[in-house]
Amino acid sequence: MPGDPLNDVQHLHADAAQARPGGRTARVREAVIDATIAELGEVGYAALRIDAVAERAGVNKSTIYRRWGTKTGLVSTALIERRGDLVPPADTGSLRGDLIELLKEIRLGLHTPWIAALIRETGLRTPDNADLYELLDKFWPARFRTSGAIFVRAIERGELPAGSDPDFLLEMLSGPLYFHLLMLGRPLDDAFLEKTADFVLTAARARPPASQQSDSPASTED
Amino acid sequence: MPGDPLNDVQHLHADAAQARPGGRTARVREAVIDATIAELGEVGYAALRIDAVAERAGVNKSTIYRRWGTKTGLVSTALIERRGDLVPPADTGSLRGDLIELLKEIRLGLHTPWIAALIRETGLRTPDNADLYELLDKFWPARFRTSGAIFVRAIERGELPAGSDPDFLLEMLSGPLYFHLLMLGRPLDDAFLEKTADFVLTAARARPPASQQSDSPASTED
Image (cartoon, rainbow over all chains, first blue to last red; front, side):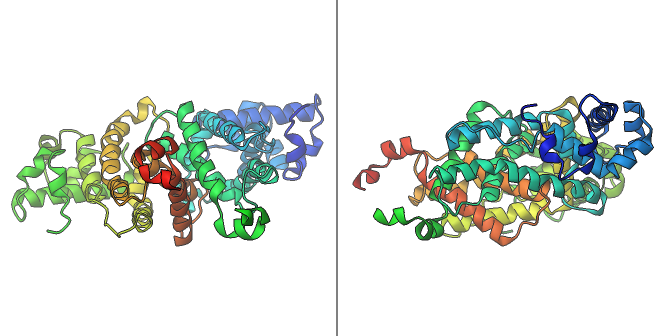
């Protein structure tokens, strides 16, 4: 199975080891994840009930509790698998190409109903969304680690200074898309994605001046 | 009154012309705006009812309808006045200083309960939030026009190339704050604000290469 995220997810979700492709365990697992995605799209995270997921999947709710423990565990599995976030981003051969592919993938996610439903429930941390942030605090580091491969490759190719900070660059890259679509309510056309990629690329290549000088002997030749 | 936003709001809200400071009209107006802000903080925009605002302000709801027309008109007045968005940003003398002041103001807004409540209701445009976007489609251009003064000044001082796009720069600047606080759930400390300002500054100074070459004869001296 090319790009099967299960290999990467196993260390986060021990239950994946029990999922034999084609077996009953695997079918139940797929049905439960499908049902979770469907429920998320309809009611969001806060209102999601394990009972409803179990009924939709045609399984006993004790099966869900036994395998995923909590609502957070279940949704976290669904999010990481179905969002494909542990699949390393395609290598287009250039940083610019990689950034545009990543931005297109983010755009796709922002328009996916169940992901949009999750996003709508984020916001300032409050006791009300502590449960959701328990999930996001697991999701984002995994997501950033995977997407960050783009910048690691770029540093290896000499396209970025050695001291670049992938996590910060990912925020500079993602933030404008969220803002443009969800705050301004404007469409994310290709031109906006390319403009954003070029902007981040310009700043990223120039930074960080301090470590660029100390880490890269080549810069002293200027 | 230094920094009185009323002067700037008048062209958007004809009723402001009737508000004589200290008069009954002004007192009613203040009470209604106060009540609107309080209701927004408690129930958000979608669930806000003119009845509830009227009751809280101690006025007849027909007074509200007569002066502000619709819920959108009322909330738009409250948002633009109380957020101070039509007050030009302070001139610190440098683009970097101006950007950091602007980011601090955005941070303050993101932590203000009634603004946070409005933000939580944004998202993909759907029939359900058409009403909110009617409001935001008025708010954002006014907000961008005012904040954009920072970049106009920077171009005049020669700190930015003449072809710079203030609206795009504002998105590059704001997006990461929204993402960092509301998606990652991480605090907006001064270090993050400064890092964001420096990043945007680096890219902004380098852009746009085409118009920089054609509009700025000085660049040929390098």
